[in-house]
Image 1 (tube, rainbow, N blue to C red):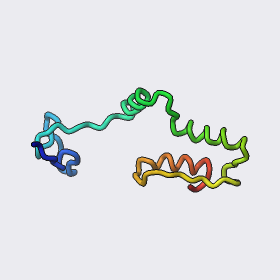
Image 2 (spheres, one colour):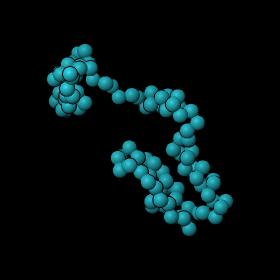
Image 3 (cartoon, rainbow, N blue to C red):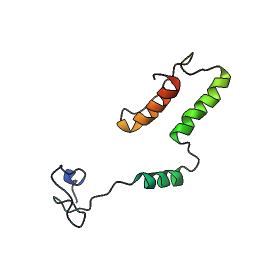
Image 4 (tube, rainbow, N blue to C red):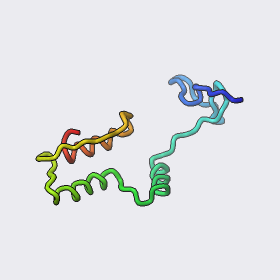
Length: 101
């Protein structure tokens, strides 16, 4: 049975992978993060019709303004998000369009 070695997921600032790209502590390969392009390619493959962030926020405005909901005037936006920092761009974009969430 293989045990989890936390050293393989995060190396200290003064420690780096060996010449083969393996963890110097447990010698397991260290996964490299995907580049932004790889992420976008994967996202497009798995969710081909998904709106991009800016498109989604724009579409909320295009849909709601004709129904009488106006940004920063008479609409209180409520957003349910994970508290993880990865959702910060979504919250910022919503707040830029609709006001503080």
